[in-house]
Image 1 (cartoon, helix red, strand yellow):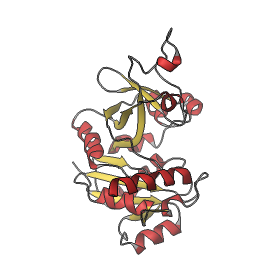
Image 2 (tube, rainbow, N blue to C red):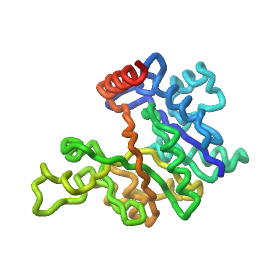
Image 3 (cartoon, rainbow, N blue to C red):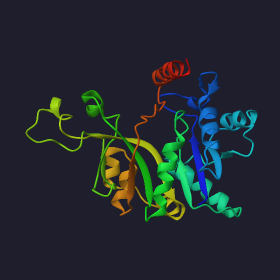
Length: 254
């Protein structure tokens, strides 16, 4: 099975402009993600997909000449950027079975997570993603943490910024007692032909409500396999997240 890993990397982040080039432990965030992905056994090829010449130049300066690709500035999501990379490589004669989307702000992604996702495509899976247990009420109630519920076969039923499931007749502070809640970890893998179709879909009503693109896929009948991970990745969205990541790195490298 040939697996393409795409790392979308935008420069113009509203909350953290220039984020991919921010330094973390002496290396840029995007360099960390790229080097980690490039060392994975599952990766047939790794591409950093950017919309900014500064990121392209940086990748070239650290030896990533063949790994960086300029993509359209019109894309609304990392999924669309992955779709462009797949299409262009296909036009060049390269064929892939699975495409993995690792966001450019996920410097601590682990190979075991990618292996768990790609293993899903031995079956009939369209899309695969990850979840991790929620362990605090603050984490459960935060709209910044996307929650996911699954059926008995490990397929996603729904994603929400609200705590789901709702526990009727139980005080909210006690919802974690006797019930399992899961946070979505936003790393995706797609069957290649499915990704091509996803990039043609119009936004769905549920997606517009929650601002979650995976609801577009569910609304159109695609199956999303969800696998467990104990590794709660530190996604870097703000300078405060970067400070947290620096502290985590210092602790685990000491």
